Amino acid sequence: MKLIQLTDIHLTTPGETIAGRDPNANFEKALQDVMNFHSDAEAMIITGDLSDWGDEDDYRRLKTRIEALPFPVHLCIGNHDSRDHFLSVFPDRANDDGFVQSVFPLGGHIGLCLDTKVPDTHAGELCDARLAWLSAQLELADRPVFLFMHHNPVATGQAPIDSIMLRNPDLFGKMVGRYREKIRHIFFGHCHLPLSGSLEGVPFSAPRGTNHAGAFNFAEPDLLSGSDLPAAYAVVFVRPESVMVDMIEYGYDGPLHIENSPEYSAWDRKTMIR
Ligand SMILES: [Fe+2]
Ligand SMILES: [Fe+2]
Image (cartoon, rainbow, N blue to C red):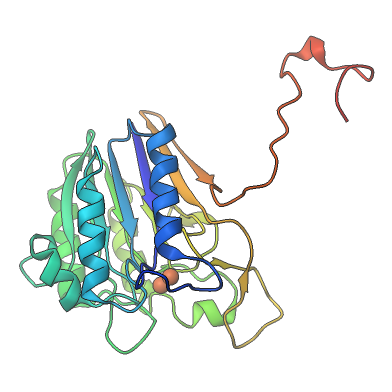
């Protein structure tokens, strides 16, 4: 099974740019890349910051666009999103508590989208109601679970980013630990950085994002750092015994060097391109 994770698409009023890049065009370019190479995906999940300013029009355009795709698209909201505006366009994406949390079949697995949005802060949180919903879903789960969320539940080691991470990581971590046998992987975004690791023994990953890129800048104590690194999304190959997450830097438009054979016998000092 193949899954596609897009994150931090930051759709905005057509013509507006972020960090000199056009988020709408970069989203479209990502979808074209997915359709060229991965149209056989089981599903796409977009892990939040769907709209840059939470405008209803952005969600309307998103809805039109994802309805044209040949696979289901599941959505998380992030700190840039407006839950009210999102739900006015996607009313069926709310759970009984009114949060954008959903459960869906995912090719022999169960997918869970979590809502970590908190008003008036860029940090995230899973309140008691959202954690209770998660706990109930995990308790019920009779197949392996993939979790999708916006905020990073683990610190990156960079103070400005970590000041706006999930602000109750201990409670979430405890729940992940309790259900670690059921959770196969956690996917998130928010940092605009390629990240991977594990939480309570459960692997996680995040791709860079489809528009503006972050930077690993351990010298800056206060402000968030950006870069001109390429836009990216993730393709996830799920096999019975393994999960491989490829970060596709589709925003890279430099040359590719298709030159050397992987054949052992073809590698020698005379013929190998160096
Ligand atoms: Fe973002
Ligand atoms: Fe974010």
